[in-house]
Length: 346
Image 1 (cartoon, rainbow, N blue to C red):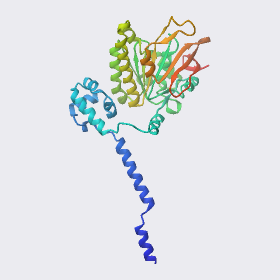
Image 2: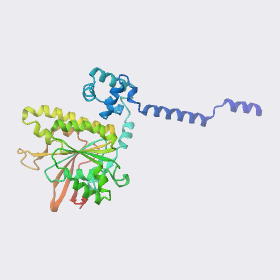
Image 3: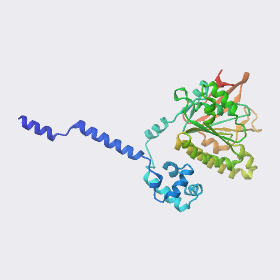
Image 4: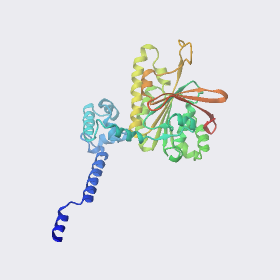
């Protein structure tokens, strides 16, 4: 009897062992799916092409996979047919297609927040400036748009428990408004090493819209090399506004702007960085009642911005921020002030 019982035990599978085995197999599948392969392993990529792709910052297969053949050919200085072959090969290796909403939620949960320095403004934005998205602030001159940019350039370097990402910043200056002195003042107030903080802010002056777009594309190679968590453009529309004058130039301007914004969104998605842009405004004379102030950029910019804020001056030196558009947040307002040490609540 005992002998038969032992035989049955040997035949009967160990449930715990089977569960453990299944768990290991699932883990292996996940690791294989998420594994990043070397660019040299891709069909059509030789050592010279791999070096070119690395030089322009295209080291992430997903970044290449979502790039058009024409764009990749121009950037890497290769033939369009070669670019098409590379992209096709990567798309076959990667699992690109439809996914369930719970997977999208997981990716959104992985998005991080950078504090603005004002609790009121952070609350309005659902915790701060978000990665994987574009935050646009428009308003009249001296409304606080650039000041928020300076604060974010410092705050992104703060420890995570203080609202930062412990990362650096790329700052594209189109109006010659970048102030290293403000970075020094805010970094001292935040308890950071001023010299180290300045070195973590990489600044480039854009002289026209073409140069601005080129700098944005070059940002891709700097993000990985310099551990960047934030890209700032102050201001986005300045050069587009001056380079394309008149109604006849409106269509080509909007086409270029659309391409520029898609590159920024691709950077935000592929590298989990936050993109902060400031925007100019104009006054509409046909609006007789209410605020005639409207942002530049039209529907192209309005549709692409993840979060859209309007800054205006308040009483006694205060600033009022109004959330104009956000997919997951209600409209609202926040009041803050600008001091030497940065943005503060009233």
